Length: 193
Image (tube, rainbow, N blue to C red; front, side):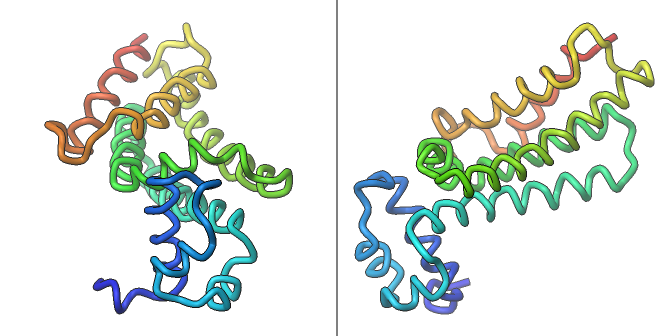
């Protein structure tokens, strides 16, 4: 969609992502966001109560897409190995496609107030628990070894993906799908019985 036809909230969030990624959350003013989005301050405050709300929306957008994909994968009823592979490839793809959003949130999430942080943690916990249930199912069924608790497996896998913004480059030699496959291969090798 061309910039001029994007909905106002999307333009505001897009401008905030670009500015927060380039300058940091603290160094970016609301005025800079509205100028970059070509909207008024009134429009920004109509959709977002504060700069903190923009930061949370950046995360909500990303985790919303990732949760929808996770739920769709789990609903397919795949065997545990195929499900873990699909989950990791999907997660790497959405993270790589949203590398600026991920970088902003990872770098700036500590700025959320207690209420927003609780909301963030609840959404993140749901993703973690759903992924963990897939790994546990594979361990119970003997598809995966149980030397390492499912919780630790998920923490390590998500930790690797959360670090993508520090080293992944969209113009680099690996596609998101290829990188996701390599990460899935690594995790699945560690889960062998």
